[in-house]
Each structure stands twice: as structure tokens, then as C-alpha cells.
Image 1 (tube, one colour):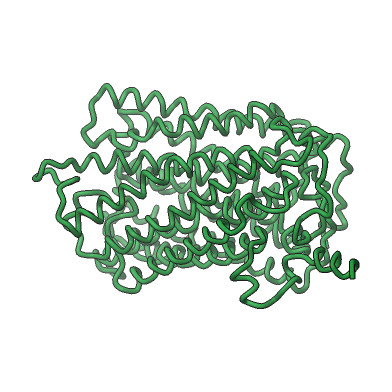
Image 2 (cartoon, helix red, strand yellow):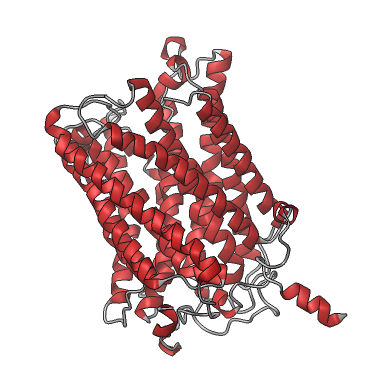
Length: 544
């Protein structure tokens, strides 16, 4: 009988129970992570469909595919779906949910039922937004700027606003769970100075979720109340202030950029030392830079408002702070580069994504300094330069980090190896396709093409043709991993427990992990990232 109990407890999350009911009522953090994976992948393709419509419309100067109103809805729903239903939850809800308990030697998150509740909240919000989509959509832009959203738009602003209000609670509960788990459930010996940098970054991300998300929730409720009850909160004719909305929106939405990018930085801090076979250069600086990004990120919101009528003196202050927030990001990039320096670098698929991340995020970060400069921002504001900058950070950074993390931990998640050659090819295609898509937008934006226009002068067509061609290549790069990762579930070779010879606790349990992660609570007696004592990965294993 005892043997039967032990055997049952050691069943992993894939093989334990296959019934739908067992998945929908699960409190296993790994299964909940997989539920999130399926959900956000669905929304990624919905958002990608609207991106396809945008790029096809901009292939020619004339508005000959979509009407102006339909185009407004397309870029609005592309932005809202990608930001609120994919980018913000992608790494924390999937990789963070799956890995953080294992990384700290815990059996689960602190509040397993709340973890499941956060997924259900996400699904409810997603269904409400999908109903908004099929009912005619929304056309306010992803930012819901007033007074258009509160007074003039005749689309489903209330429904979209409520959907995003609801999905915010999913982020709040996830952040709360992470903070309590990291504080209270670390394995014996796992001090703050030994925590994986993945955990440090998610800790900083969780703080932003807890402090910032209620602000955007309240802001959207105010818009809904203004539309439904005819209040005058943002209506200047009634004594309100439409610029107040921008202050409230960007107080959350600029830190939200770091909700999207800090988890990708977390992934980089695990991949780069592993495939450089070196301890992270300046561990303490990299860890503290995550906290610094979270703190300073709340102080720079008004750099989005340099042309909105704020005072020159406040604009100067926010410009200076915007340059200051670049410092901890630069610390990370320099320390990752120093980690690779004279390391035994291997160009496996996760490392290719990591190197692509560094290149693309660096371009995105440096061009952000252009937009933080008052005189330059006046010229570049609301042009395609802003679109390119945003996507170099959010897609070139966040999505590259997400794909790198999925490839790095896929053997642990699935217990199977993927075809390494196809992985490397996909990483290369994504890098080439992304640059071909968005780099021409820097040029056309500098030349003055405004964003969100469905028609444009013919002299800008060549840049838009390049962008659309690049988007086609990028789509192939995104589809390939889905194909071969799904293929690997059935045909991939069984993965060893630690195929990369990595140092984290998550690699010291089975692949895939048992239900409660560890048979016994581990005790940590080593420092983080001691790769000097680890053997090199087995190249034969990686090539399977």
C-alpha cells in the first residue's frame, strides 16, 4: 500500500490524470502554467491576425483593403490583445508559474487555489474581449485616450474596458502569489544572495503588478462611468481634464513595459551563464538592477506626454528620469556581455534567442533615449519611429525572451527534446524577419510618416513593402517552433533530467517533474551559477 501511494505521488503532471475535470480543477502550478500557455498562444494568434491585416493594408499607399474605421479597429485590437492578453502574462504566467516553486525548492506556490482563480479570471476577461471583437470591436487605440474614448467613439469601449479591468485582477493575484512564495517558501540555505536571477526579476515584476495594476483598473472604470453615467471626469467642458487620463494611464502603462521586459531579462540571466559555462558577472548588480528598474519605472510616465501640454519644467524632470531608468537596463546588458566574454559559448537554440534578444533590446533601448529627449521627441512623436522602438523592446525583447525560455525549459516541461537544427533555423528566421519588419519603420518614422494612418504618400511605399515582407518571414519564424515543439511531444527523444548541465534547483528533479516537484525538500549549500564545477552539456543529446 505504501509503495502504491509513493508511486501515485511521483506521477508527473502530464501522466497523472487525463480528464478535463482534473485539469480544470487542478491546483498544480505546472498544470496551471500549461493552461496559461494554451490560452495566451490562442490570443497571440488572434492578435497576430490583426497585425496581418495592418501589414496587408499598408502594402499600398491607398486604403484599398480595409475601410478607415475597420483599420482603426484592427490596430486597436491588435495592440490591446497583444499587450494585455499576451505580453503581460506570457512569461510570468507560463514560465514563472511553472518554474518559480521548483527554483526555490517548494512544492507549489503559496496559494494554489488563488493561482487557479487567476487563470479563470484571465479566461473570463478573454471571453468578454472576444465578445467585444465579434460584436464590432473597439477603435480607440490600445491606450483608450480621452476624450475620444469617453465621449465620441461609438464602438464597444465599455466592454473592452471592462475586459481589461477584469484581466488586471489575474495579474494582481499572480504577483501576490509570487511575492509570498518567494518570501516564505524558499528551501533551507537558499538565501537572497543565492536566489536565481530569474526569481529576482519576477519578484521585481510582481511588485509592479501589485502597485501599478490597480491604477489602470481604476482609470478604465472611470472611462466606463463617464460613458455610462455622463460624468465629467475627463470632459473639459464639464470641468474635467482629458490630460488627467494620460497621467493615470501612463503611471501604470510605462511600468507595464517592465512587466513585459523584466521576465525576459530573467530568462536571459539563466540562459547566458548556462551556455557560456560561467558564473554571472556581477550577480548582485544584476539582481539589484531589477529592483531599480521596478522603482524608477514608476517615475518616468510623463515622457509619453511631452506634446500633451505639460509644463516645460516637469518635462525636463521626466526627461532626466527617463535617461536614468536606462542605467539599470544597461547594467544588465553589460553584465551579460561580460559573462560571455572568454566563456565557453555554445550556440544552442536558447543561446541564439538570447543573443538576438541582446541585439534587439539594445536597439530598442537606445532609440528610447531619442524619445526621452525633448527636442527630438517633438519631431518623432506619433510617427512610425515610436512603433519601431516599441516593437524592438516588446517583440524583439519580450517575445525573443519568451521563445528563448520556452526552448531552454522545454525538456523540463515536456520531458522531450526538440530537433536542435530546426530550433536554430527558427531563431535565425525570427531575427531576420523581425529586423526586416521593423527597422524600415525607424526610417519612415524619421521621415515623418505618422502612425495609425491607413493611407500614406507614395514615397513611403518602399519602406512599407519591406515591413510587410519582413512580417511574412517573421510569421514563418513564429509558426516553426509551434510545429516542432508539438511534434516533439510525440516523437522527440526522452530528455535527461538536466540536458544543459545547468545549476538551478529545477534541473535537480525529473523531466517532466513529479506532482510535488521534489521527493524531499532540497537543501542549498552552493552559490548561484557555479558553472565552473559543472560538466559541459552532451552534444549528442542536444542533436537528437
